[in-house]
Image (cartoon, rainbow, N blue to C red; front, side, top):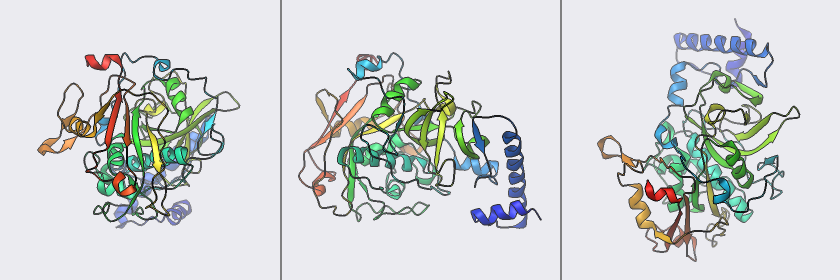
Length: 413
């Protein structure tokens, strides 16, 4: 009997439906073990080991990482202005920032503990919740875990629960409805009936920003200001089995099928630049749930496509899980904005077929959304003029306004 296999099953609680099924998973485990042996026998900037994915079959990997709504990751910025045109007067960013520790401009963590998505393919929901958590913590000083389960159960306009989705598609839901605390609407590992009407929302965001893609230097500026959500190709065996170091497997691919939360960047003593990314595979994967991904490799899209579709939430408010009836804390991202457009107009825009903006409808009339923006400075800010949390998240509120900063070339799109 293979003692290492028995230990692996005990450690990860693996149970198979039949002897035949166990044999197939054992063969996958043996392949992973050999991969680890070969990788660790040669010099590399990162390490691999036997993780919970070591026995996964190819069909399980593809099912878990199906790039659902993959086109929604397709943010482009052809002809976008330089970063300085969007953020006038931005000073040089520090050479290292970590928003999950005190090593950042605020001197405190704005990142919650690492979560585990289990068998549910809802990395998008974890990342969207993390963006909101950090935006709220930066604005209010209140750091609390928000409900991923609410997003999985209730955000059905474009995202598809445990099948897949995209953080940017969850932001309109959070802007419209807010999101409950994790403590009152906990994660279960599967989809269920939406309970947003029975569980109070405690936090929200006033907007979100699609950042310049294919530009790690611009992304560094933004991560210096706030954590950023990204898509990566997460199906490479080297990534699934990652245990530490600076990940730089340039063969990992560029199809964005997994979401990560970039919380910082730095440089090793040997001069290797990297991103600090929070994953949603639990604290026993990688570096206590994190992965350092190499940056500045010369690849425009970055390792695993990390620079292809960055996005961040802005203007976090709320953060009163202990007393959801308290008036919300407000703080807007300190950027200028142009005259407002109504929230009704924004809703119509998101649900209208528009080839120029690549908004579309799926088969059977089911609404889907593609964001194929050809400019970098699309900034959405919603000002909610309300006096109570109930009014804040009321869908019928007439005091919802949106402003849109758009580059000059947007008018020509």
